[in-house]
Length: 442
Image 1 (tube, rainbow, N blue to C red):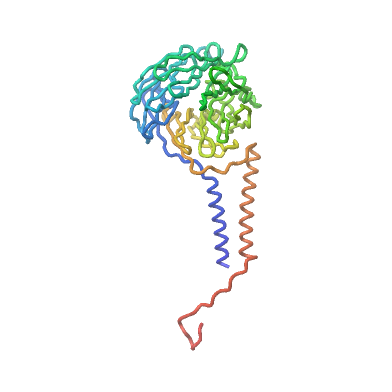
Image 2: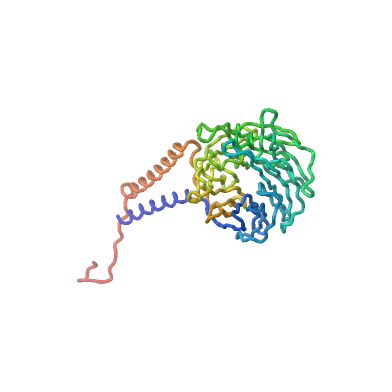
């Protein structure tokens, strides 16, 4: 009987190990904070650099800064940039970088509402951080950039009209090309906030419909532009049923989907005010720009960035209580992990993600450590994608977990019944005793 009890224990231990293996997930490898002087420091953009290090686009009270680190996050050098904040950052093959920085102006008051304005700078640096050239784009808001060969693709908008556009620049000089295309029309604005570049030169853009803080973005959209012509476009999401977060929607980041098409993440408020709250969502868009699915992201009100990660996706932003949050998403759109860094009521957020490899990524943002904000760099690695719960409502996901748990219990009971009731025990072998009493074996 003891032998069979041991066998049952082995079954139970195996089940526990199997369940633990299914929940294996993401590991934090690096967590570094930065204080560069001034009253605050915000890490706003990140890209892998040569030697396993990182480029960090940062900002403090003195303006925009480009920081290069080694693989451990230790600063190698820093370089001052024009502008107040870093909007986007791309590492180049020659060891340098291309960035967009912004000078943002704010008009209005709390009673009348605030509106943004400002200029954008397009900047190229060499591998030591020295600025090779910079180009000011007056009255322009910066959405995103992509680099192909000797061409920089830029997506932005005119602050005064909310009219979006794309424009190319030469990598060597920054001199603008002449293939500018406007997005939207006289009645509908289109503000491009994120972009990716396909191998055939097609630009895939996503965004919203306003940059004004006093308005709601009418809808989140996605569009394909090639050769200066809009090939196709469609609406991803028109808003939320919850009046607390407004009826708008705005696409904030885009990556290629694991199973084809695109994965877009966004929130409800217009550009620039998502720190006030929102309702995060993720959408799988097909190659023909139709919605495969759109799921809300409970616990992540503002998803600022997304990358492929392991067998799914990694999303980073903040929750509705001003805590930075990251989460992993299955291919089917189910949240498999969610990690929140509590700041005890003090504001903080993640701003950007960069892929390091298929199973690792770097996140940057800022946190309130003491009396002022500090920049933060995290690296995460995927050690085994958790079991993906079915796409759908929270009730459906819990149902899937109960079914899986019931299946494990049934297997355990079946194994126990086999050992205790069905399987016939083997006869015990006769043991010999070397000690003899009265000439008989004991």
